[in-house]
Length: 366
Image (spheres, helix red, strand yellow):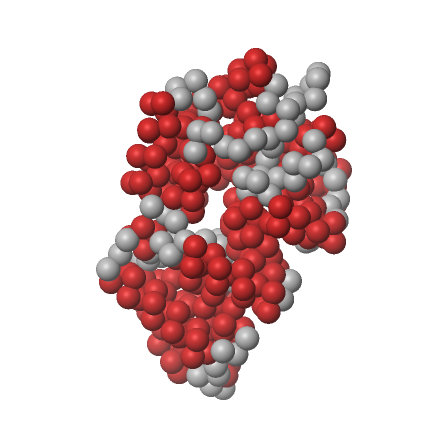
């Protein structure tokens, strides 16, 4: 998963709503077992996740949990932009059913947990609409969610989960290029990087429902945004251990090791990825060879071994990229860097020019 994609997923997961009228009751321990099902999704054990949420639907048909969980599972399994577009209708239907049931329960019981689930459903729907190219619908949902997040905090300051959504908005908007940030600030707020980081840290340490997502998001910010690899590493290692079926955390650990010049450890993680791809379970069933070879190309490039880097970057460019079309831009950019290390400037320029023609990913901008 791209770093920005991971951050947006975590942002949208955190969206929580608060209703008007009397203050809602504080969030209580989850029942039905939502967190257990979300853990299955984070571990990319999709058959078990679907079975879990089907059982939730059977036992609690009037609650939003089962619909929300199934929508989250489908969204995560089809996380690539193209597959999200293809599955938009099915995902949105599940999420809308979840939002409707959450709203009905809140009207009857005034429990903040139901508002939280309604907000999650609304946020996930926004993510799907964004992937489908319906940017105005996604914008309206985010604007509504932010307003309601603040109301939720004002009515129950001890319920810190909304800080993840608010924090990520502050952080991501503060990192936008000047013109984009100006336009967003006209419609919403201009963001605040320092405040955003503090809010995300709070959700990661004290969050009830979004703690693991907040930790994943904080790791991603430290590693890919702030380049504070020493802070990112313990978070990445803990997530990899907790969710061994999710390849994203293996790639994060390997990338961080490489940035810290701990190349033997980075290559050891890459070997783990290869072994899991050869006997695939969970998320490794969908893992494309291009991503693995791109990782090796990066590690060898960081290690100043451009010949080995070119071997793996070439394999990446000639392999199936699956749900990760952004790999192409980065592989071409790093191909150019490897040629430059070898003193092959013309070959480097050809790779850089081709990278600028790639539409997806940050590689062309780099």
